[in-house]
Amino acid sequence: MSESPFRSYFMGGFECSTHRLQSGRRLDLIRATGHDLYAAQDYRRLADVGIRTARDGVRWHLIEESPGTYDFSSVLPMLAAAREAGVEVIWDLFHYGWPDDIDIFSADFVERFESFARAFAEVATRKTDGPPWIVPVNEISFFAWAGGDVGIFNPFARGRGDELKLQLVRAAIGAIRGMHEINPAIRVVHTEPMINVVPHPERPEDRDAAEGHRLAQYAALDMLAGRQRPELGGREDYLGVIGINYYVHNQWIYPGGHGTMIEPSHPQYRPVWQMLREVHQRYGRPLFIAETGIEDDARPAWLRYIGYEARRAIRAGLPIHGLCLYPIVNHPGWNDDRHCYNGLWDYVDDRGGREIYQPLARELAAERRLLEEEARTGQLAAGSEPDTHLLDVAAHWMEIRSGREDVLHK
Image (cartoon, rainbow, N blue to C red; front, side, top):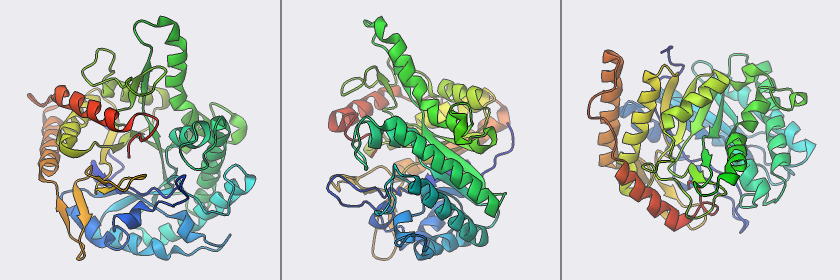
């Protein structure tokens, strides 16, 4: 396996969504979790458990409250804290949110985003040890579907998913160009969901439609690479490192909807390591699992499962360079403010402390030992297989509670 580009294999991701809800309220999960006030303690916590790479977010709506005027006071303390703790951060520039004065479907959106990306590139270059890591637009495919096709995310459009996807690709390409003019060494990451969609065994006539839906997961990356819509200016080297987002609900039976999730022990469930192999065969880029997690008592079992699948991929010769626990701290639910127990640490107290969830901490330590053992022996460790029955129970519970179109992974 080639040398990793990251400081640590295991990573922690801070939930950083900033979009407006249908109620009009703007989310700010960095503020809601206290991460903005206690970033220094949070990054030190990561370092203390051996996590030296993190995912985090830049809040565009706070930085550019007036067009063309940038105030980076919301992120400068975070940059300094990460540097002090020795933690490298992969910064999301666009995690579903943007300033209120911009129409996301307008040409102005693309121009403003490129200018914003250039401005952050200048700051990050000055304040980061080594080349900054940046995700221009998080989950282009998912956001285009949620905000442009089915109207559950701002801008709450329907039937405009392809149009929104093109806008986001234009913005990402413009940002990459602009940032590389500032600093050619900036490292680019694209994070996209990895899915599997299959027809029902009793409906073979749905095979082509299901496969078309499955292949749509690659459209944004294909455009960024210039393989589709070359007039947008995509290039193969713009792909950088590809981050795969994968949750328990990422496989379903076409056409989707409540009750169609494919559970891990189901015969139509596709092993995650094989899905990772397909991504690598398609793009030939370094990969890492950029988001993965689950709620409540299933957290250790899910990490055991994903860790096992990632190691299977590594043993098959795939360049899997990381696994990011996402989120790394518990947070309020997007729509109902419920306490989501999905992190390694809980809500922050008034002194910056967070209670650690010991079962997940123990599994993280076990996964680190397995990774080291297998790197030494060159084969999967005996007895490291996960219990898929526990994951079936967790998947069933999550689907009953949230459904597919209502709440996907938050």
